[in-house]
Amino acid sequence: MSKHILDRPKDAPKSWLGRAISIEKGARPDPASLALQRRVRGPASNDRVAHYVRIDKDSQGQAE
Image 1 (cartoon, rainbow, N blue to C red):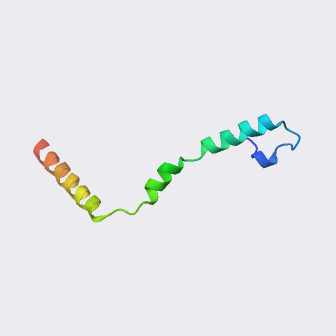
Image 2: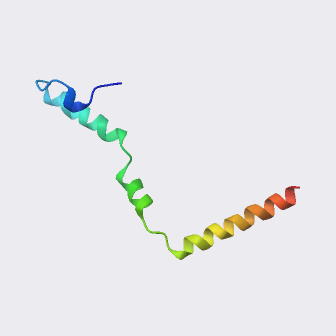
């Protein structure tokens, strides 16, 4: 396991530090995907899920 950025020597060149910070930011989830996960879902999404579940049940019933 690699050391955390703050655990590395402070005399490192700035270009190295910038590269390390970009690597750490790349390891995190994208802020846009986090915003989508936190978004409140409305009643329309519940209707959509029920519709897809009904379709799935119908397709399983026909396969038997």
